[in-house]
Image (tube, rainbow, N blue to C red; front, side, top):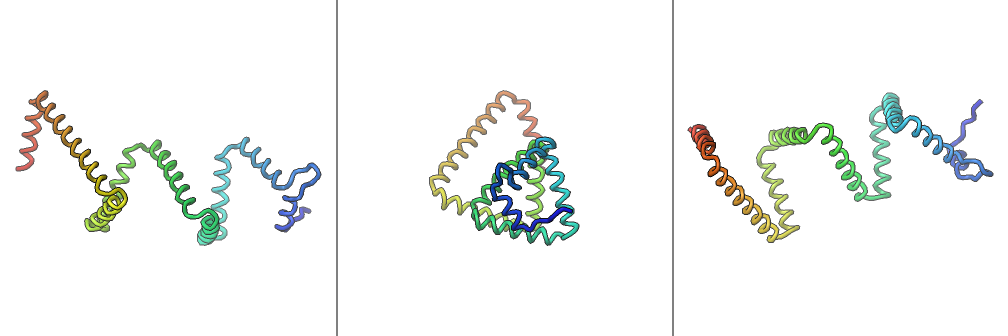
Length: 189
């Protein structure tokens, strides 16, 4: 017959040194390392997923919400908001790299475009005007007038460079320029 230990007994056994023997915690740790070496991380991911599905079947989604909230509250009290910001940034960056490598940059462009269209449909132009104004105000408060002068100057330099490149191209390829100009004019009328 297998004896079940109460939680307090397990804690006591884990902490109690036992004449050269391992504690329960040490044995569990060694066993976990052995399984990891033998089956790898995907094995743990799979059994964790199966265990999670089983818990949802038995206790339902609200149970997960409750334990997640309790765990999150404990972590927030222990480490504070900066901890969440850091792990979010790391996770978001890592997840972004994985998605980019899997689906490519055009995928991001497409989902960004779809997201923008959806927001525009739902909130309209005034929403974009408001968030642009808020962003501009924040930048002005943070960096001041010299920042705007600097980026304005850089933007002007780039426009001048692009115009010069376009004029050079026009001189080097006059036939293409005339054809393009004619097409633009025909679209206007």
